[in-house]
Image (cartoon, rainbow, N blue to C red; front, side, top):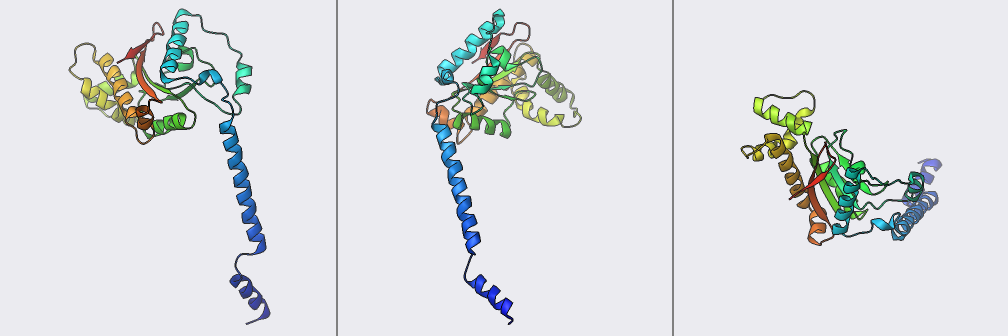
Length: 246
């Protein structure tokens, strides 16, 4: 064995080099600093102290905000000041699952400011795994005490699902994935008195409220502990009014 090989063998048997050990210690130190910084940030005051409310109080905030919106007396806000206050974090008082319909804008409908609402939007306002995970984050990390599933009348996604199931046709592109998610509500509301579309829209809200309430292990536990309330509602396009769904 040559001398160079002997040196390499001795280094291998001796274990990790001093440089490697120092680098590892350095990485650990950086991790510790980052972790302590994150904890310090979590321990600090919330960016919007007025958003630290109970589930019932959060619902009242949504209701009063919608009343202002419907009456056309929405508040004037200092957006620049709100932006600065929210750079370090967020503590929304409610999460909203709404349709992606361009006519439905939760921040407007509830006269909310920056950092007030944690909004997930998808055509047909249904809770898939990504939506559930998003609200798990809002509840467990941001402390949101309320989630509202917000449907709206004349929903195109629900209407398309109705027509697809009725005609037995397959929609183009990725639209069948929307149909598959909304179809249970359409089927379970079939045969009810009244307008089939309105019935399906309402049932879709009810179904997704139930899905979020039972989502384990985070959302169902928060509901059981009284830290979280999950409710349903329907936005009326003509008036802007939000009606609760029992």
